[in-house]
Image (cartoon, rainbow, N blue to C red; front, side, top):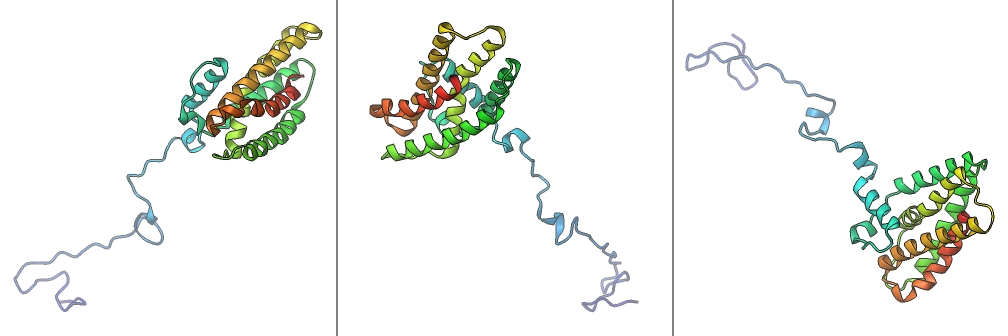
Length: 209
């Protein structure tokens, strides 16, 4: 008869006459404790959600650019999604490449410097609210959609001449009006909207001309 650590028999008969079953050893699922600190009921979120890609917000922002009179929700203003701007920049580069111009370096180079400049100007002008750099890039990137469409038209038609300049001017004004509308709503600077529009107009003029 073997005696356990507590003084009672192990695997034999107790003082009550019943046999105590031998307890099987238990092992943890990982090193450092059971389940290694992870919960079995934890469900990983989808990959797009982890990357911050929200197709609902992408659609809402894109439709706000296409329809200038559409109201802008605060949730969209607070969103700093960069998936749409990156896609639009790549599409513009592809369209220019098909028209015989390889300008990826110019697009991302001027885009980076221009977005940072607009970000600095807006925060210097705003006295009540501030906007972060990611939201600035998101707004400017989504609002460039009319110029991307203009770049796609250069594949099919030659836009050299007065008619092409007129279309480029209209696209620049469209981009400027859309981005200004986003920024004035986010910063509460409607009385200063024309001051906001001026640097944005210069920014899109680089891409439109």
